[in-house]
Length: 323
Image (cartoon, rainbow, N blue to C red; front, side, top):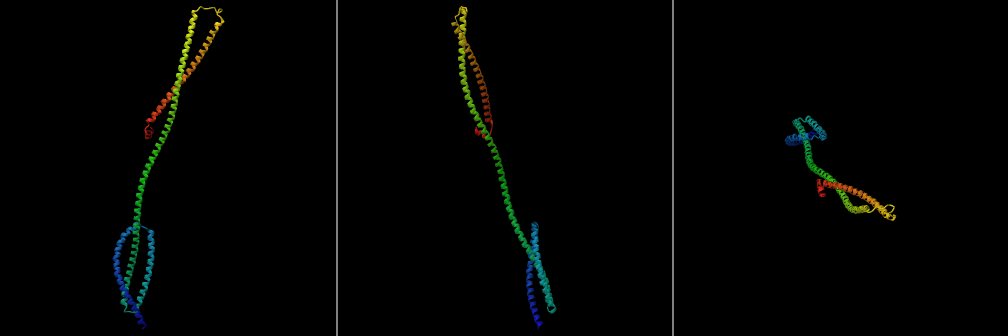
């Protein structure tokens, strides 16, 4: 009875195995579909292997391999569980000869199950690789987004280079304007210097006009002095002629009172002659000074006119603007 109950339990176990076998057959059909999916995934995998070889992230694949090792250890535990089931089935084969067929069927199914387990592991591996490929695809899309961002940055950099070239041109223009500003400052200083020289020239012109007036006055004084000197010479010549025509008196007979006016006239004439000579010398010195001053002024005027002509002949926008 205990054997029968044991056999009934084993029969129930076999019924469960039969249902498991039917379930495995359904899973086999599902696995056939998965095999076709796997073939399609293998084709996609071959395509994705090219992408994986392009990406070549070895450290990430190492981490994936570690995870696969843990999966393999889990599959080994499942295999140990299957080994235990095999030992149970072999024990049932020894106890029940009737169940030899089922056991052989179960062993065949176990082989198919092992094959299915291998296929399942392959499918899981492919799913993991598919997930990895999906991650790689997302990485590629992220890289494409980064590439688009880099393209935008490249366009921004090219725009900045254009702006930099424009800035360099503006800097060169500013340096050119600074040079023209320095030239303008120099011209302004030259103009101020010319204005000062012009004021000096005006002062010299006024001095020349004053000297011309003094020269005219001195000429008048000189003419008056010369006319007076001529008058004195005429008086002296008339006195000499009158003395020749008169009868010469003895010196002893000439009264002393009559000689005094002659001596006085002679002394006065000598004094006037000396004063006239001094005046003439002073006037000659002043005339020479005025002539030298006029020559210097003419030279300075010629130099200033030459400088003005040089400044006017110089080209440039700022010089024309100042002019």
